[in-house]
Length: 131
Image 1 (cartoon, one colour):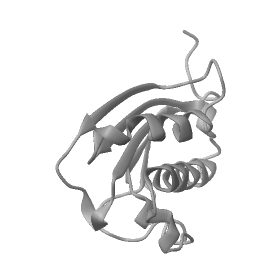
Image 2 (image 1 turned 180 degrees about the horizontal axis):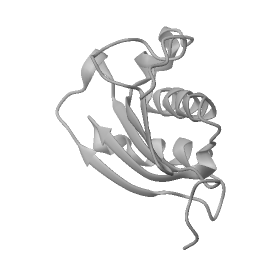
Image 3 (image 1 turned 90 degrees about the horizontal axis):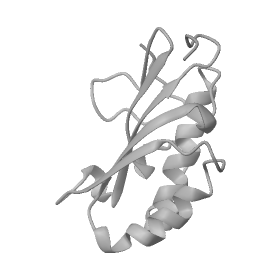
């Protein structure tokens, strides 16, 4: 169980990362959670997506992982008409052939006035059993 106060703003009583065996779970991430991001991080769905995924990348690095190790992503969006713009920004972060499975759902609201929230699961390759 990891909390990362230097990377992620404290918004709720939860761990930011949980590890169990070769599986790693990241809590829901908003652009506003990034302690290094300025207010421009909330300017558009593109900047929110980029800010979230850069933060997720930094979070993964604390447990020696990269975005290539992400196996599943859950995306919550408040406006599904912005899906294509989110998708273009999102695609730049995952190497071709290593895209995780993904579910995207529309919601009526998110904390901090966010347009998007990401929750991820990853697998630590050095701990994974042979498939």
